Picture 1: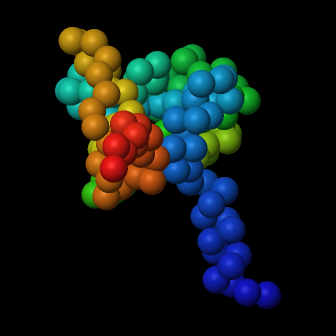
Picture 2: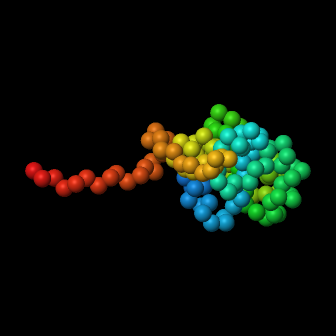
Picture 3: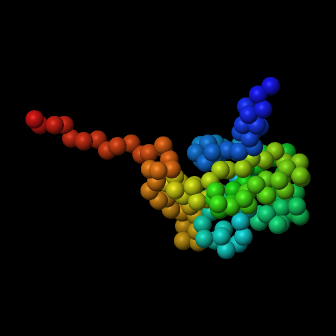
Amino acid sequence: MNTDAEYFRAKLRFEIDIMDVAEAYRGDAFVLVDTRRRASWEHGHVPGAVHLPTAEIPARAPEMIPAGSKVVVYSWGPGCNGSAVAALAFAELGYEVREMLGGIEYWARNGLPVETADGVRSGAADSLVTAHQPAAPELPPSTS
């Protein structure tokens, strides 16, 4: 048995890349949950996400998210383990849960839409964090 391979195979069962979330989120494959505090949520969140702070998951998740639902959680970003703590809380309640790697920070850095009280906006994708770049503009034919 290769324990390194087993570790990474198991890890991939519980994590999900931001672009995979963005592509799959167009359907109803899972409930996306922002697990940050109210002020962070108001600062900006993924449109359509459910706001459920980590500390409230044990008490409120069963009334907000139907049993048997697949859940994807996120928090701020890679410098924060809030989504791992939230994922554990959902797992302890029996939900199938995955953690969105990179959180809202890398969601925004990938140029994906962020919602605030002022509406939904998308910024430019940071070429250092995403391979999903917009197509290059077509150049006029050369005259030489």
